Image (cartoon, rainbow, N blue to C red; front, top):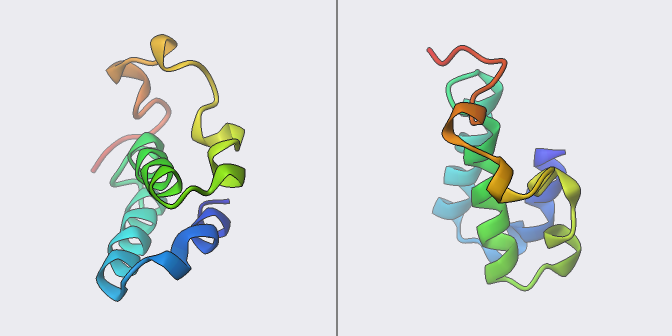
Length: 80
């Protein structure tokens, strides 16, 4: 899902931005970052480039931000 979302914005990114975003996705996969770190970055790019399809995807905002807290950001994962 994260790589698919990356595909929606990658044509608008420069080489360094692409590498940074892909590295961020890999850090999540390696359990070094919480999912929210990646989804917030993807959402920011979706807004920046007017990708309304991507902005409407539930995985970017599975529940209202008011219900999210810092204690939720890494739930189920141990950060190493």
